[in-house]
Length: 381
Image (tube, rainbow, N blue to C red; front, side, top):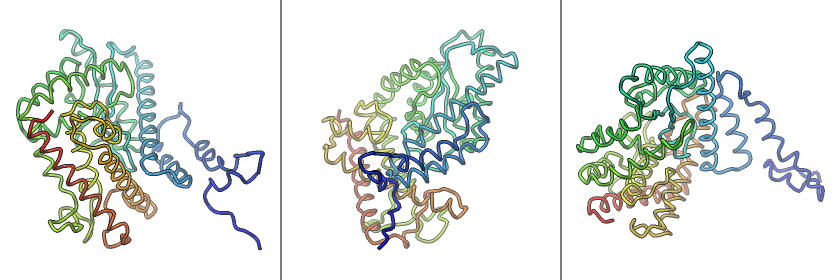
């Protein structure tokens, strides 16, 4: 009988006995890395290569949460390349070196190491404080830089943010002192738009520049936002605008608005976002300064003031991982059919075990959202 080798690359680990020749194991990964666009090359279609990387990582049976970290790392690399190319271009055009210290931030899922396929841009820029008399000179330089690097990312396949959350716009490009003033202004009122803008800013990580500026902004967030009780209450109330995909009987309930087909569940907006938002809120309230949802949950489980037991936190991390896996699987399926890599899943096509697990996960998210809301509203430390 001739045995057929199993498909997983890991099955080749002991193929050559004691010699431990792992070249066969590493071959798929080496092939995709060899095909990566050179660092010094233009970024055209660099994002398309990322899809090949993801398919290779899937062959290595990496879980979606780990793949999302690698996607986030690659997107951060593309940001650095785009900024470097833009600075070089500006130098060649006579702009000179940056006239002040600065720090470019990645916002949102990229900052949380939770990027999947089909992202858009979310970024911001901190400029070190400078006198008003130099505003046109200095801000003009960084506006030009921001327009160039966000344009290059768009060409690479990471499209411009439709909500204009990018450093090319003045709202997301400010001096350090202006960022603190902006936070103070936003949090003085319990207006929905202000809460939404603040939520966007709360998940950030530095990608290029002086990290001390990012640390200073993080300190401003910790100093200002948790102390504004009415604003925090409005943040808790806005979680009601992100209901999980369950009806009042605990059955799966698809999204009616903008659903592409009957029974469609939006895994991002009806699952991941309620969890991510509630974890962000409770972390802010409790003083947890981590950015990724995984690390936030782990710290909340160790922090008695959060009211979250360690086993509950571990269970929510598992819920996050399962939702990321289901979303990535759906995105890969869509791309294989030439469709958009979105988070819509057809509940009618789920296996019985998937349906059961999804109901359970949504129930846990619903309970956690309620806990986070009550904790913030009660003012419990």
